[in-house]
Image 1 (cartoon, rainbow over the protein chains, first blue to last red):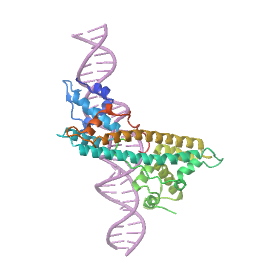
Image 2: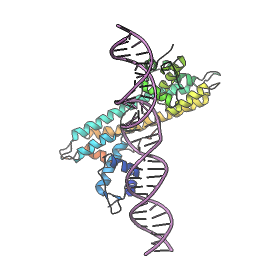
Image 3: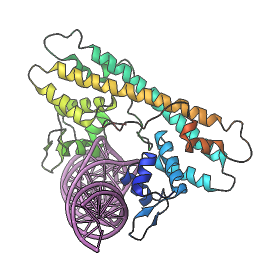
Image 4: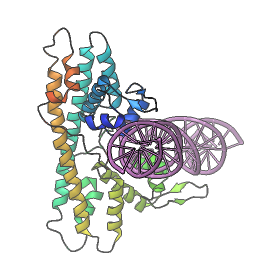
Length: 148
Length: 148
DNA sequence: CTTGAACCTCTAGTGACTAGAGGCCCTAGG
DNA sequence: CCTAGGGCCTCTAGTCACTAGAGGTTCAAG
């Protein structure tokens, strides 16, 4: 099987400019070209991009995926390191869930303020402006390098 | 009370370059300057930045915050619109929680594969590469314009 | 008056793409 | 064999919400 970049895109669900971007940053090896300078991919290109797509869907950062792909290339495939990265990712996801759950309950509280609204001041706006009305702490979400 | 940009930063927990950035994009009005061209803020500056900080911590996008602040300035303060924005934010947060919970369970499954590892192929890497092994669907996280 | 911290503007970089301009190539139909 | 139109090419610039750094000015304490 030989794929054009568009065919590869359809097969994997990764958009064409994104595939070129992955090549540019070194996540995919430089594709071979046909006589007219267009990219041509084989089975291994399909598999590599499929791996990236799946790992991205699971929230891994491109840098992590780079590491994972390098591990996969090694003889014997370093399972311990792969496992470490996967567990780190899991921890991050769990932390973000916990954080978002706090946010959700705070937002619920604020949204309910409107149900019994008075005539004058908007309680929602007041609550948004005043942290001391909050029932729980809520620090900013840590900015992760993973896909948001 | 008169604040320098550094004092305002300490009082609100928003970093100095971020305050300048907010001014640049029109989220904060242009600050008054002293004789030496340095920004000086009063009570209303403190309150405006406090509002922004709190809303950001709750995950609102800067664009949403701009709308909310405009509402707050209006006579009568449009509570219905503020409520709509808050509820939309809540829906987004809930959707992200659901999505992340799927991810977490998938990652748990993958991480456990290593516990009974065989000698040859790393099962973690295999699982990452092969979506068909997954127990559930997992589409990519919708890229929101809110703080991640 | 001196020192050094805080302030100023401006540019460029982050992650992971996305959009658009301007042009070349490939393939199916006539 | 020719043409039309879709797909492909490179390059630049934009997204969001900042962050980092260079190079220079101002303020306040000692």
